[in-house]
Length: 295
Ligand SMILES: NC(=O)c1ccc[n+]([C@@H]2O[C@H](COP(=O)([O-])OP(=O)(O)OC[C@H]3O[C@@H](n4cnc5c(N)ncnc54)[C@H](O)[C@@H]3O)[C@@H](O)[C@H]2O)c1
Image 1 (tube, rainbow, N blue to C red):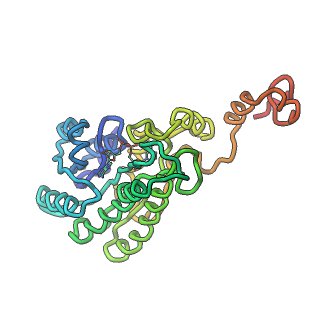
Image 2 (tube, rainbow, N blue to C red; image 1 turned 90 degrees about the horizontal axis):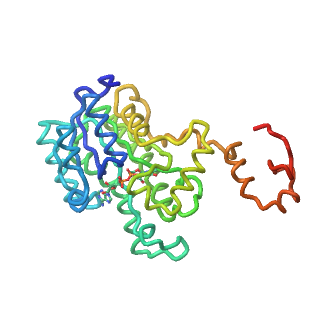
Image 3 (cartoon, rainbow, N blue to C red; image 1 turned 120 degrees about the vertical axis):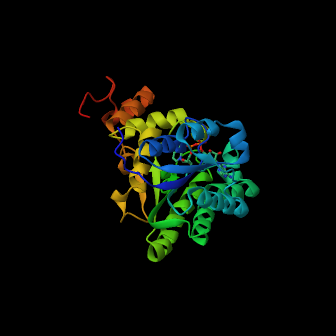
């Protein structure tokens, strides 16, 4: 159901690769809500992905850009301002990539060349996008910028590797630039910390299936889907959230506030060797241990 939340608003959406991408869902829903936008991604992603289908369906133009390249970003803003004949209202940064994760190099043997690329693509590109937007004075007052993050910025999660450092930097950039851009132009900058989601980037995280099962069991509301993430993004682009800025906002079904849930504990207990159950009957749900069914 559409609410016309973004009627008359214009923006730039970075990172829609295929119909699993979170940015893809944001573009579809922003279109439904009356927004117009420019889509951008790397030339290689545009060659290999399906972005042109999305552009057709949402009446958008595509401007290729590697988000780590300032000349490419300047071109995106020049073309966008020309296309709309004026300023824009929102930007989505939905970009992440770690060559260390991709090559399965563990955190205690990182390639520093790769590490710098992870930071540049997944975090510093956010600074570059915002700084370029500001240089071009591209955003209307009360405009909104959103990037996508993950709880590994706050807590250590097995196998998330150097992306955790990139997400911590990304969230910090939202706060640091949020102060400056808010003070000077009333522009909001926030990050949304999303549940694990089965996308091309998400599938690169080792053990994503088990991780998604664990977070589903741990979250009272269950994992948030890409569609639900898109819904949250739209509220932040809308005029309903004009005083929300410099925040990292969790869209994770409650996962980030949990320590242990009954559903996760049940699964953990099932996996315990029965000898352990005899040693620690209070923590055991099998017949050999406690029969306490309270969840
Ligand atoms: N999928 C998850 O589990 C999950 C969870 C939390 C946060 N996120 C974040 O959501 C965002 C979107 O990821 P997704 O899950 O939709 O996966 P995705 O693979 O669909 O999107 C990642 C995008 O980044 C783009 N990209 C990579 N390098 C780039 C560069 N140099 N310049 C411009 N674009 C570049 C890719 O082409 C791709 O479109 C990322 O920031 C990701 O870290 C994902």
